Image 1 (cartoon, rainbow, N blue to C red):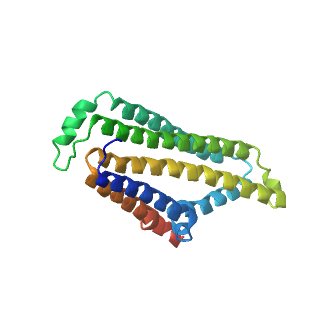
Image 2 (image 1 turned 120 degrees about the vertical axis):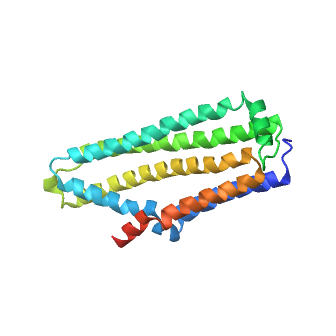
Image 3 (image 1 turned 30 degrees about the vertical axis):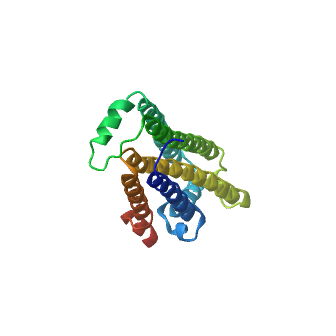
Amino acid sequence: MLGFSNLDYIAFIWFVAAWAAYALALDRTLYGQRGLNTRMNEYRERWMQQMLCREMRMLDGQVSTSLQNGTAFFASTSLLAVGGALTLFNSSGDLISLVAALPFGAVPTRLQWEAKTLGLATILVYAFFKFAWSYRLFNYTAIMLGAAPPASEQDTPEAQEYVKTAARVLADAGRQFNRGQRAFFFALGYLGWFIGPLPFIVTTAGVVIVMWRRQFDSAAQRAIVKD
């Protein structure tokens, strides 16, 4: 109906499959447990343990606020990006001519361009929802910090269970934030489709390689493994 070529469909299927496979490998496999994101959960639990030992918890409140502010920034950015993607509808004619002049540019129809733009906006909306939920979870964590048992009760079973619960909520907040960032990265790969299906395949592969290296072969990951 939209008149996409077979190569366009192959490139799009490759994009969806790469995103799904990367997400499943990172979140659902034993290999993914070696990733930087998952290993940070251990430090989140350590943080909650240290928080429980402190009588004065201003430092914990400051860290929590910093996490909330960072997430709010990304949520606001994703909304601006959605607005920017939607403005592509109004300037599709000029942009189509620009893409056609590129060496690997494939000339799309106006309907194809608008379909691609709608796909980009959908990815960015997904990112916004992930960042917004992450912000809410960080807010819940801040409430749990305020409701934590006093340091004098840190060795009680109830306090230790409270630490584990707070750490799980904090880990979920981090997980949702990571998924929002992942959507941002794949949105960058998706931009290759506006040039053509072959660049789309290449940019998607490039995004996966970059994210994989950061998770499993970065200096930060090696430092945490050593620790």
